[in-house]
Length: 512
Ligand code: TNX
Image (cartoon, rainbow, N blue to C red; front, side, top):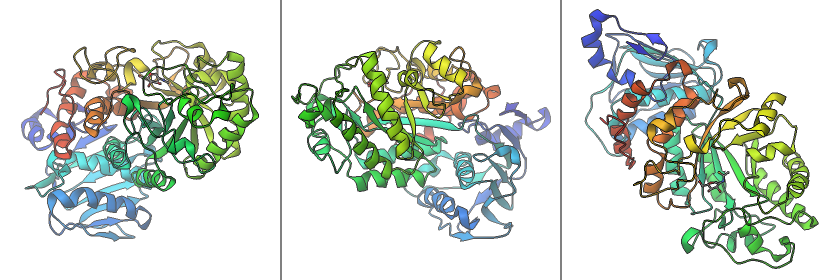
């Protein structure tokens, strides 16, 4: 039996080990190496302590926060400088160098559980694996009955790609802070480490910009379908950034430019070439709006917006959109990006954008996000050849807003139907011709929200496909196997149910 990249059981011990160690086979994303250690299971109890290296105290608090509600145990978190002989130890240092700066080594023995990593981020990833080695009901918000037994094992793990992302569109339908936090909690469990927040679009502007206050108060006052919309105050945006950071997730803010800007154009007449503000829009058309490339005030506006949002954003990236600018001429698009990309750098950020924008720059630090539906793209290929790193979000594979099948009640279908197996069966490292694995930064699963209104809608579209994309981003390609994956995925069901995640019960998956 092969789990991860390591052969674990010999035939003689198979029946017993298979029962005792079953959770070892169901971790998503599958770890690089899993070795069962029969007889070394560890059971958490009311006296179990969590010990941490001081610099990882926050990871210890996170683990305790996961375990306390369902177990009812106190799980005190104590700093340590040694190697504790009991409890759960989260230690920075002593991990094999192969785990790098995001991986970890988890050792489960009868006396103690020891997690080692080179960074707090690595420990955090290891904690997500540990969670999944416990029964799914550990995710419950209310006390459950144990035993809380973790199978004996040594797991050595690190990600395939540095960037595992998810995007939420809060512009088409506004999603309040509580909904975003709920999604961040779900993302963390699958080792997603970047959260792309699509803050502005034709139908809504969702963040306060002090120097342009009507963006939020007017531009944020409606949404698709005509509901009341909404926006984040700066404090609320910072609350999201901090909540993400506590889960080792970096926020990438997106201000979509120069198209997808009707909400801004409706808020300030002077941003329009004709000086007339259009009305707010609540339909789902695309490609009709553009900032006025020839006006100086456009760049004052863009600079103010970038400066104010960059100031609130500790992460290194600022996403400038750049997609579907059909109302902007090619020359204007180039002119616009020539002025705007340096502004991103001026405020200390690296530009990321939907892949079209990469034709306007040779800066190899700029990150094109591929969202096309074909397997070759000349502009992206040329960027990769120059040394740019591509973020892969092919719409016909990675878009969480596409319907699963023709009877899916939510979602769009312009890029096709995406069943769970479709979401899983592609290789980010070979998908685009001329964009080899070494030119791929990672993967992102975007969730556009033209039809997505509630947290339950997010759950239904993201689960189970988010888990498939997360595994493509984390697990070594050598582990890629649909028949094995669908069983691991099916084993997530009790976990999702315990968390209140209303997932799509695809008939492709043998749900537990
Ligand atoms: C295309 S993909 C868009 C979005 C829509 C999405 C709907 C991309 C970069 N732009 O504006 O919301 O399709 O699936």
